[in-house]
Length: 83
Image (cartoon, rainbow, N blue to C red):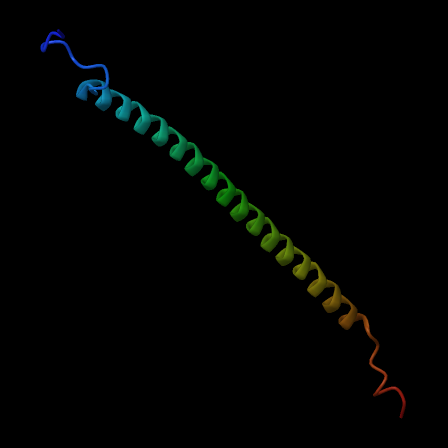
């Protein structure tokens, strides 16, 4: 007969199960952390791109405005000369 003090083969050890679940949770946390870091880096790259785009548009608008201002100042006034 089987000794009742020995665990049955299909009986699950509670300590072993808790260790296995803890290891699985540690692995999932590491995966979630990597995914979160990747998401944050993509978001930061998006903000940097938008910042560079906005600064580029502002600089381009400034130079366009200065050029139009310069051409407007260099135009001769013909309305007073025609009389």
